[in-house]
Image (tube, rainbow, N blue to C red):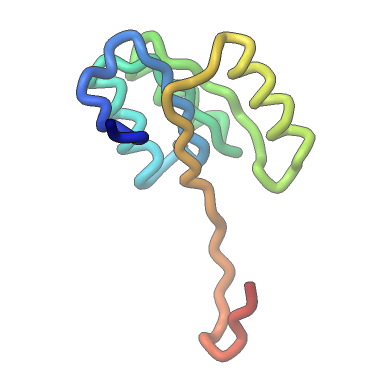
Length: 105
């Protein structure tokens, strides 16, 4: 028995994508929605999230900034109030121009 079996049927499942206002996060949210998942999208750009919801009926926008721990905790509580999601995908990131020699975790 696999501890992480692939989910092939997303109908009736919930997915929360953090960092879903553009790029990979938004594309993943759209793909899951197309497969029948109820998608919750989060990111700082509320306008982009609301545009996603308008294009993907049944999805839900939850604007938040991952750099603000209180916002993340409040969003998680709101998502969990609807039951545990079947998938949480964290795609948020930020870009800071730097030289490779200046890189630090």
